[in-house]
Image 1 (cartoon, rainbow, N blue to C red):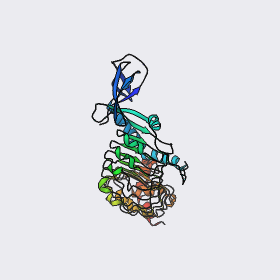
Image 2 (tube, one colour):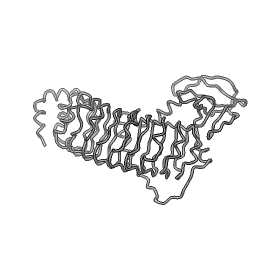
Image 3 (tube, rainbow, N blue to C red):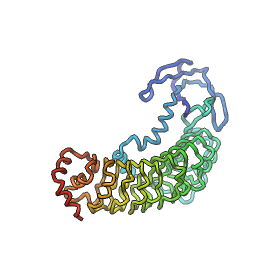
Image 4 (cartoon, rainbow, N blue to C red):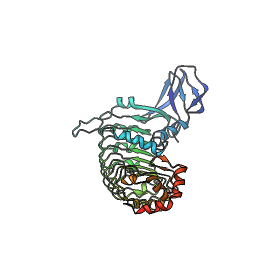
Amino acid sequence: MIGSFLRQSSLHGFHSYTRTLVRGKVILRRDFGTAGSFKLVIAGFYTRVLIWSRYTVMSDVEDDEFLQGESEGEESVKDEEEQEEEEEKEEEEPVAKHEEQVETCTVTQEMVEQGLSLLCRTGNGLSHAFVKLDLKERRLTDLTLLTSFVHLRFLDISSNLVSDLSPLTALTQLLWLKGDGNVIQRFEGQPLGQLAYLQWLSLALNRICDLKGLGGPSLESINLIGNSIERVTGLEYSRLTNLVTLELRGNRLESTDGIYLPNLRKLYLAQNGIKRLEGLDRLEHLTTLHLRDNQLETLDGINSNMKALQYLNIRGNQVSSPRALVSLVEVMNTLKSLVLTENPLSEIEDYRLFVLSRLPMLERLDKEQITPEEREETKERHGELENEEDLE
C-alpha cells in the first residue's frame, strides 16, 4: 500500500518519539533534528536530503484516508439528499468557456516544484518521493515533462487547455486523476486503460462526445459532468468491472441504453434529455438512480431485476399519470427514498397517501419522512386510494 509521508513542523531536538493525535487516532512520530536525513526521489533520481527542521513521520493510514477523502468523500460520505443540495449550488456556477485559439504552454520544472507535496515511501520502501502534484489553472496544453515523475499517485490538472493525456502513460502508480475544465474530446488514444491502479477519475466540463475507449481495471468512480455525450456506447465493460459510481449529469443523453456495468452502485443522469429508460434491468447491484430534470413521461424500464435499488430521484420530469407508479411496484421491497416533486403527478389530491398506498415500504418521499399518521391514514383509506389510479 501507500507508504508514509512527512510533514514539516518546527525545529526541535532529534531522534525522539512522541505520541500525536491525527484525525482521532493516536500514532507515534519520530522527530529528526539537524542530523536527520533520508532518501528522496524526484523525477526518478535518488538523492540524499539533509533535514534541517523537524518532520513528522505519519502512518500509512493517513495516506489511505487521503485517497478516500478526495475520491469517495465527494459523494459517499454524504447521503443522497445532501449531495443533491450540493449539486443544486453547482448548477448556478457558470461554465468556463475555452478560447478556440491558444498558445502552447508546457509544464515547467518550476511549476512542478511549486505543486509537489505529500512525501511518501516508494514502492520498495527504500526511498521517498513526492506523490501529489497540483497543476490546476496554469493554461497548460502540454504535459510532456510529467513522464519523468513516475512516482505520482495524485494529480490535479483541472482548468487548463489539455487535450492529450498520453504523457501520463508513464505514471503507472497513479491512483487519482482530476482533469476537469480542459478540452479533452475522446477517450480513444488516451492512456487511461493502461493505468492499472487508477481508482478515481474526473473529467468534468471537457468536450467528450462518446465513451468509446473508456476503461480501467481498477476504476471505481468516474465523473463526466457537463460534457457532450449523446449515447452511452463503447464502454469497455470487461475493463470496468470495479466501477461503482458513474456521474453523467449535464450531458445530452436521450436514453439510458448501453450502461451495462454489472457492479455499478450509483448512477447519476440528471440534467440530460432522457425520454426512455432502457437497459436498466442489467444493473442488479444499483442502489442509487438519479434522473432529475430530464424528459420522462413514464417510468417504464424500472423492473424487478433492479433488486438493490434504494434511492430514486425523478424530480423535474413530466410524469403525470398515476399509472407510472406501477413500474415502481417492481422495486417496492427495496426502494426506501423517492423524489417525485416537480412532476405533474405530485399535484394530484392526496398525492403522498396515493404514493404510499402503492409503495408501502417507502421511508421518505420528496425528502420528507413518511409519518406514522400517514401510514395509518393510508390503511384506513385503502379502497378509496385504489380507485384513484384511473385519474389522469
